[in-house]
Length: 232
Image 1 (tube, rainbow, N blue to C red):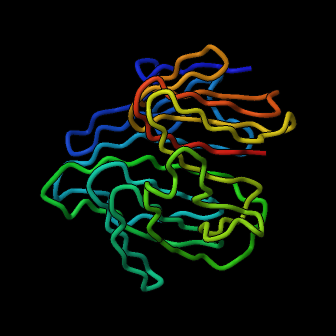
Image 2 (tube, rainbow, N blue to C red):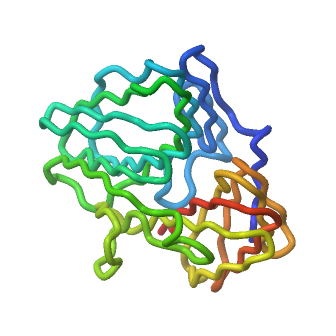
């Protein structure tokens, strides 16, 4: 089953410095049919103006993954962590028992991110933060695990939940497969380009909510950059 959620159907709000689109109910946007997808709770498509951002604010008991599409995002938190994550790379914050952080676009260009929140399956642990590069060449024609709650997923950033965040870059006409399993759910969004999944076309920034599929086969209609969550 594949439910297409066109970009034009997403909720959201434009705050001037921030143009936010929500794949799931978030802040003042509420849709009872779009509250979560398995343990995936939030997928925000944020466009952040230069030299602006989110001032310090708290989180707890949530795995927050940021995929930078354009520009860069600078993180700082009350644990002393400070770092800059650039386009194509990923940062993970495990909020755990509580953390306060800020996220700013310190660049002179617009920054665009996907921010993904996944409910943890382990609680009561200390908060943590990390970032690392994921060269797009390593994802050419295949899915690479960017963040994972499972052992054995190579250099993926660790998250404390039964889920994976994956990325792939496909040239037009290429097909990538992923063994999802019929007991799992996936949520897929092309950052750029367009793909086809079992006859359903998914264009840039559309969402595809997928379940009851053993093996996903994604074919690029045009050159595409894909982000996907494999959720419980």
